[in-house]
Image 1: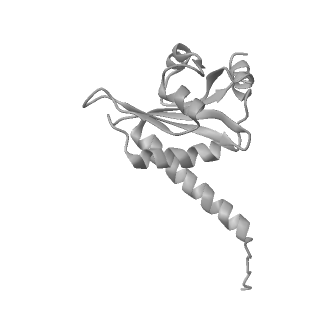
Image 2: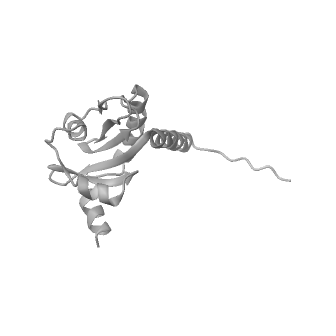
Image 3: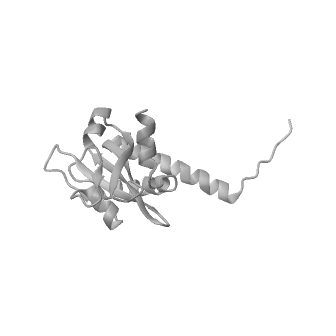
Length: 154
C-alpha cells in the first residue's frame, strides 16, 4: 500500500476552521432561538427586508413586512448604530431578542435578528450571533432583499 501525503495550505485550514466554528454557532443559535431572520437593507438604505428566515411561517414573515431604518425596534437600532442590540422579554416565559449588524467595509448592509426562548438573552448568544453575522455579511449586499423577494413571488 502506498502512502499519500496530503499537504494543506495554511489559509485553507483556517477557512475550514472558520466554517466549522460558524456551523457550530449557527446550530447553537438555532437550538435556543424561536426564530432567526436575516434582514437586508434595500438599495436606498431606507428599509430592511426579511431575506432569509428560520422558525417562522410564510404568513408570519408576510405580516412582518419591511422595517423602516428609523423604526423603534432592536433590529432597526442595530442597523443604525452598527452595534449589537438585545432586548429582554416582558417576564418569565416570554422571549427576548438579539440583533447584530451585518458589517462590510462599506458599512452596514443588514441585520441578523434572533428571537430567543429566554426572557433575557445571554451574553454568549450575542457572541454567537456576531460570528454568524460576520459570515453572512461577506455574502449579502444591499438590494439582495428585493431580488430574493421578486424571485420568491414569481
